[in-house]
Amino acid sequence: MGMGSPAQPDLRHARVHVELAVNPVIVRIGRELPAGSCLYEQVRAHEWQHAQVYQRFLASAPQRLRVLIEGTEAGVAGEGPDLPTCMQAAIGGWLNEQTAELRRIQAALDTPEEYRRLTTAYATSH
Image (cartoon, rainbow, N blue to C red; front, side, top):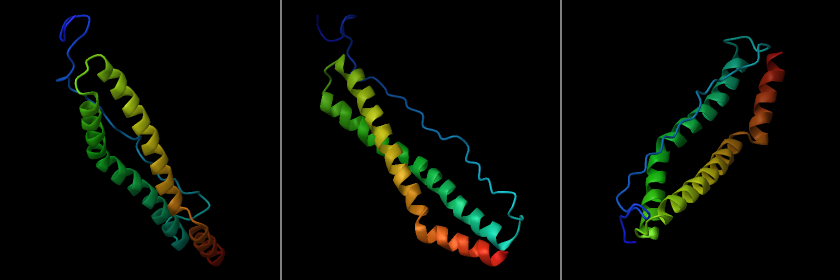
């Protein structure tokens, strides 16, 4: 069976369509913090940093994914049926790596120093 036959389709020119999205980011602040208070604004600003990380990460993801897809296609070099399997494995691994990186970036915002700063702000506001 040659390339392009029904049993072994030619996938060298196949298109890959991937949609990336995150759920809407909702910043919730405890009701014990009066809206508009200094502490409320500090907590809101801290949480907004987390929301911005998601937005920036998602905005830059298509380029990172494009590089992965092109590299995977080149690595398979048009070997037909192996391309979908390789692409699925590559994208699955990429998603796991991206999730871990996003968690690392988010955790870097939640330092002990930042929690001390917010705790101090809370203590001085009461």
